[in-house]
Amino acid sequence: MRLLHVSVSGSEPYSDKTLDLDFFAEDQVRSYGPASGITRLGGESSSVYSQNVIALTGVNATGKTTALRLLSFVISALTDNIALFQQVHPLSTCDNSIHIETIFEAKGIFYLHEARLQPVSDLEDGISNETKRFAFTFEALWRFDKKQPSRAQLKDFEAFMRSATLTQVRDFEPEENRKHDKYFDATVRLPDIVLPYLSPYMSTIVNIAQEAKPSPSLTHIAPNPVLQHPDIFMPATLDDHNPVTTIADPILHVFDDSIDYYHLDKDSQQVHIRFTGDPKEYVMARSEAHSILSSGTERGSRMVANALSVLQKGGYLLVDEIENSINKELVHMIINLFVSRKTNPHGATLVFTTHYPELLDLLNRKDNIYFLRRNNQDGNKVDAVKYSSAVKRGELKRSEVFASNFIGGTAPKASSLKAIRDYIATEVNKPSSTHHALPKTGERHEKPAK
Image 1 (spheres, rainbow, N blue to C red):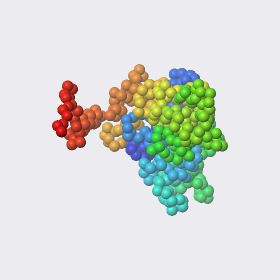
Image 2 (cartoon, helix red, strand yellow; image 1 turned 135 degrees about the horizontal axis):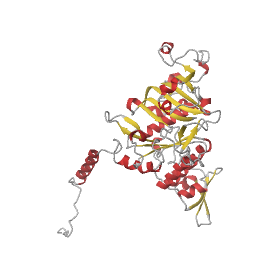
Image 3 (cartoon, one colour; image 1 turned 180 degrees about the vertical axis):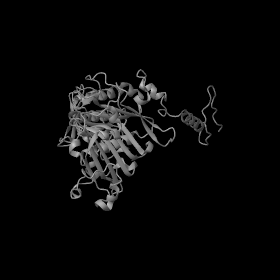
Image 4 (cartoon, one colour; image 1 turned 90 degrees about the vertical axis):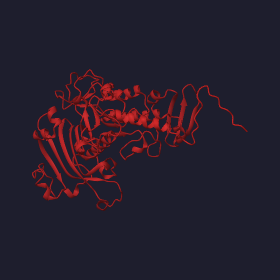
């Protein structure tokens, strides 16, 4: 399964409570070279390409991490049932009704999937927890009739439906709701006798989404333990659930060439370490060895190792704050692993968030960058604005467009920056009974008389 368009309705903090992202190459593809950063879908003559890299950027508190969580949930929900059956933290910002629409490609065929989900009470499933969890109440699947959809049809769900055939409807909702649903079609609805045998926690399109193979690799890398969720890989912590394992030598050396090797003995849970230029091997407990690695080495090596698992069979690597603790050139290296067809032959996709606009200049396309910004009309809502839609001039540096606030909402307000400077200046110059001013230059401190 390769996602081409995703819409999740019913979630804060987005405008109209809807996050809408597309993953196809909307701009013209002038050359499909080995480093174009896109993957052709649907055959040799197809003009549909999926993006290998998607960047989400914006100032603080604009929903970037929430976007990754929702995307992680959508991918998991369509390819297995873990996102629904287990406690679902990504949906903690959602309403009591969620509407998901996705356009995706599998085995050269293009589909549109629609789903509605409702919360499940503890009493209904016998599992007691305080986390909001959801189950499918409605699903519908369309198969595109022609060989490939146009860019306009990939952009517009209704336009896609008009040229597609509704092939399947799974409906757990009350019968009185069905006749009002414009998507309901009794001829393709799964019969009532079948519904009790279908898990409300598992999508009916799992086999299509998995393409009759193991589910696409999905790794979500967040920068700190505060963001931990069941489907998020945490590279910044060392614990029993997420231990540091053997680091392949080429991966280790690019982040820290002072260590010759770092190998975990799985039987004894001890680490074997040798430092460059030192013939002696050191053996120590895993917890002790952890302190030897810098946070950048640990996080970067885990990120590359997980990128490898995704690149090997195609899938999605979701990275929050990709620049966290890692040198810019090494971030560029990780991005290029997905851009180059040599290291990414299966069309895997890297989706990352960043606060550093300089990283946007490393991307060779402008239709794979989203600016998340506060809405001008309602400052409490967030819009996801595609760079190529807001900025037509290709010669502009993306980092300068971002830093200059060219499209609005991509830089802190000048009034806010001035306010914090004034506040700090007031606080540091505030008289204090416990504060003794230092003497001015040239002044002498007289000793108190005895």
